[in-house]
Amino acid sequence: MEQPNNHPARTVAVIGAGPVGLAAAAHLVKRGITPIVLEKGDGPAAAVRAWGQVRLFSPWKFNIDSAAHELLDRAGWSEPEPDEHPTGNELAENYLSPLATLPGIKEHIRYQAEVVAVTRQGIDKTRTLGREGTPYLIRARINGGYEDVVADAVIDASGTWDHANPLGTGGLAVPGEETIDAHLAGPLPDVTGTDRERFAGKHTLVVGAGHSAANTILALVELADDSPSTKISWAIRSSSARKVYGGGDDDALPERGRLGSRLKEAVASGKVTLHKEFRIESFQRKDDRLQVEATGGGKPIALTVDWIAAATGFRPGLDMLREIRLDLDPVVEAPARLGEFIDPNFHSCGTVPPHGERELAHPDANFYLAGMKSYGRAPTFLLATGYEQVRSIVAALAGDREAADRVELQLPETGVCSTDAADEAAGDDDGCGTSCDVAPPSRGLATGVIHGREGDEQSESPEAEKSRDSCCS
Image 1 (cartoon, rainbow, N blue to C red):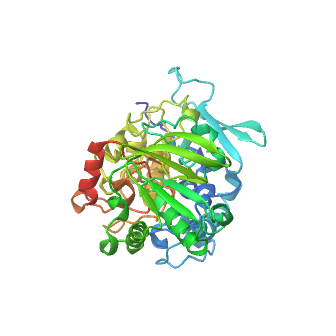
Image 2 (cartoon, one colour; image 1 turned 60 degrees about the vertical axis):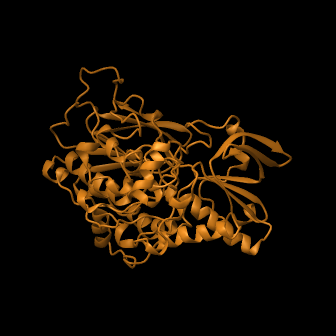
Image 3 (cartoon, helix red, strand yellow; image 1 turned 135 degrees about the vertical axis):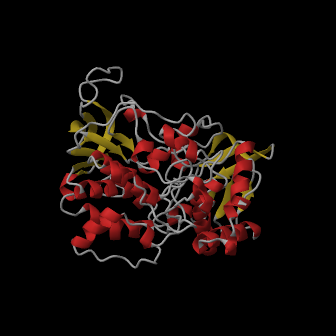
């Protein structure tokens, strides 16, 4: 693997102005390094705002990066009540937006700048001679044209929100899935808010078995109380929903426990129709509605719906990194040294050890995946873990090896999670990935806040399901 440059980086391109990207910018500013933040949206935390109505499991005190906190305090910031639980919108408005407007950060953010490619300046992936020490070129689509940005290093914290997993099995889309966009509601629609009129009196099929699905279902139940003709179907690939229901009153995180208990009650009362072992085979248009042809428990099922909320998780967008020499785990598409610790076939979200720059390094020196994207297809990411990642990465880029190797992640043993999350990366999990986040003390593990997109990919593997049973029961 190529060794890091001997000289500290002077400029670092940060892709994404979400929680982890802005934390990276804060750490860079603190170290006297110039950040160049490229954000696809028209403002900070665009992905967080997309699920802004969802309330986090974790209180404010676990949602704020240390360097960001320090910079905000210097600017006279009014810190939110530490023990209150923010919504995604509150996280954006009361923390991320003020952070993005700080001097030293504000002037270095480019909005509506969609990164389409990253490479070494003038050198493609196949060339080795002269590669070390050559700066990076980041090409972005801005204002209808293209602009190239040059930097000494790159931190890709662009997340996975724009790369949802398909509705089909085996990682593939259902035949014809690309033609049903008019019926897709997104993973976390604002059912009782801005999207209310779209869902009132309609039939919605929610696909997924994580907290994204649970939040959408419960919002639909609330809507149905006011609009009784609203119909709710819920589809999961596993044979049981008990892991989604969680530990109820015994859950270490009360908000998470209540979420599962309310969901279980909604199914038991008949307000929600649960379809287990659900496999979508095809779609048929029926006037202005959609007929979903599927099997459930091996038997044919036909549902005529108005909307499908596909809470099936996410995967990393790697096309823009085609010219970068990456070392990725073949299973979860995360940095190889991290992959073995986050593979949901063998680990719950509570068994991932704190990690930093060394685990996130790639053959191309000074290039890093951070935040949700660093977890690839693994189902659940902890926001505080992302903060620790960028702290370590920036320390290494500044030439402070001791700080880069030091573990500074300190959180309660029980960990903390967001109620949803847009299950900000990942798959379609039927269990641990979204509901099991207690850190086994024997691992010396620290866990933290799930970033706004926790994985919801439903398990297709009996072995994986058995593994999740053992860690979540």
